[in-house]
Every structure is written in C-alpha cells, then in structure tokens.
Image 1: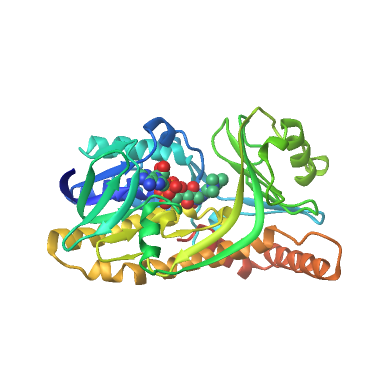
Image 2: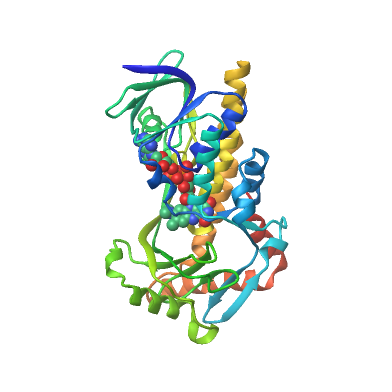
Length: 390
Ligand code: RFL
C-alpha cells in the first residue's frame, strides 16, 4: 500500500528536517516529515545549545526565531584554563564580530515542530523509515509496519545512522572519516552556569568543558577513556573530577546541582563525498557527522537545510535542477571548513596521555597553540571567525 505522492518526503524531525520542512512550506512546496520516535522523545532530547549568527539569521528570516529571541542568550566569551593560568577571549567582538546565541536544541526543535504544524505541515511520529528506493520520477520510502510514502524527492535528515545515508552509501557514495580517538562524558546538570564564559580546561587528567545552557541548566564535559560506562560515574565522582580539571582550588568553586543526564560521546567525524543525487538528498548529520568539539553540528544542519530548500523549490516549482546540481559544491566547502576548525579545536583541547617523549612533545605543542591564542591578535581573530562562522 502507498500513500499519495507529495513534493518532498523528509525523513527525520531533528533540526535539519524541521528547518527544511518549514522553509519548503514557506515556499509553497508540500512535504511530509516521517519521524521514528514519538513527539515527547524528540522534544525532550538535549544536545546542542550554541547557535551561530548564520543560523539565527536563517531562522529569523523565516519567522522561526520567536522562541530564541525571547529566551535565548547572547554569548560571546570563552576562557581557557591550564596549569599556566587562565585567559578569556571576547570572541564575539573579534573576527567577524558575531557572538553565539545559546538556546537549547530541544527548545528549538519544539519551536520548529509548532511552526511546521501551524503552517499546515504533517509530521508522522512513530513512523520509522526502513529504506529508500528511487524510481523513474519519484522516490519511495518504506515505513516499518505502515504504508510506503512516495515523493518527487526524498530528503534524508535522519542522522548519521539513518536510511538516507545507508541508501547513498549502498549506491557507492564514499565517506571520508576520522576517529579522533577521544571520548567525552557529556553531563547535563540542574545548576546555573558557574562561569560567564564557555570554559575549556586543559589538564593532564584530560579535558573538561563548561557550557551554559539556561539559567538553571549547565552542560559539562569530561574527557574519558573509550568504552567508559556512564554508570561508573557517580555524581560525587563527576563533581570531584570537574573540580580538579577546572582547577576550582585556584579559580573558585562550581555551582553544583543534581545530574540530569550523562552519556558518553565518542568524538568521530565523517563527510559523505556527495550529499545526494537523483531523487535523494541529505542534510545535517546524515550528510556528515562532526565531532562536538567546536559546536558546529546543528549549525551545519541549518545551513544545509537552507541550501537544500532553495534547490528543491527551484526543481519542483520551476523545473530548474541547477540548485540541486550545485548543492554539493555550495555546501561541502563550508562543511569542510567547519571540520578543519573542529579538528584543530580537538587538537587544542586533548593532549596525549602518558609521559613518553612523544606524549611530552604533543603536550608542548598544545601549550604553544594555547600561548599563540593568548597573545596573538591575528590568531584570536582567526579563532573567532572560525568559532562563530558557518
Ligand atoms: P538529528 O538531530 O540526529 O535528527 C535526526 C532525526 O531523525 C530521526 N530518525 C529517523 N526517523 C525516521 N526513520 C528513521 N529510520 C530514522 N532514523 C533516525 C531521529 O529520531 C531524529 O529525530 O540530526 P540533524 O537534524 O541532522 O541535526 C544534527 C544535530 O542534532 C547535531 O549535529 C548536534 O546536536 C551536534 N551538537 C552540537 N551542535 C551545535 O551546532 N552546537 C552545539 O553546541 C552542539 N552540542 C552536539 C552538542 C551533539 C552532542 N551529541 C549528543 C553528539 C552536544 C552533544 C553532547
């Protein structure tokens, strides 16, 4: 059984799929979103928080920024701590002069779902895509336990383990990838931020990070060995380790609260050689996964959704396929620039473990990078431009 063909079948109701869906409806293109989880699960998933100015512009232009304008916080400083002291960068005033807006991803997702439904869009929650096949003038999405859905195009926005990516790699698209060899215990705590800035702490026991989310919720990261079980990290152990690595004895205490969530994230990055072709196109983590070291993932998802919406509109409303033909060339250089910076950040934050000569050499490079960032205005501008730019 098949349900009626729409313009675009979007698989996945994360930031990529929801921005794409809203932009398509805005342009008069009909679409349906298939999401395997239920609405509460999608709206409750805490992940990103830092939105680049470009993302805010896209959301504002399309009437999707009321929530972040009301509750988001402008954020333009980060600080670095190590055994050599601490320094702060006003990155919002350096480089492009663009700060971040801090707005939790789950709140953005909630706003995007509400806006999509308000525009008359349809989201089928609990509809898991089981595969995508291309036919002459359409593409077909198999839905597990339900009717197939067909569209003139399918947008795979279902993350890096989704069906969109699987269908593209099955037809020979290659993936460039890197395992950064590092894992983070990502912790969400019910406590106000402890610092005015994003905090990056370099420590011989491993990296620790502090990121504001809201007035009452803060995200912390602790570098941990690959294969770590989050259950081994009690609240006490988490706060003790954070205090050590963030050097609270020297710089002041952290504001503690109950741990709401803890999960281990392995830092991996990959990019598909091409984000689509024919009737199937990908956006967001489906097209490339970026390690969270520079907070770029959700922002790349918004960028690609914007480019893809424009290209799909041209194809569907005007029979003009040049936007789709250019989608890879328009998006990949910007995606790769974000990966390059993210990779550089990963090198800055994670020193090698151990005391052998190679590890000692690696740690000195880490200090040299940090010192360059502390003292060189040119380096600071370059950092800021890449940290906030998309
Ligand atoms: P998502 O958000 O994973 O959404 C994909 C959706 O597809 C659904 N799905 C399916 N639906 C139907 N059928 C199937 N077969 C399906 N398979 C999957 C899923 O249920 C889901 O709802 O991908 P999208 O839209 O591409 O968005 C990507 C971002 O979510 C991600 O890149 C960011 O969260 C990364 N990230 C950050 N990015 C930033 O820009 N700034 C940050 O501060 C930031 N912090 C983070 C992060 C990611 C983190 N983790 C968990 C890796 C912090 C963390 C801890």
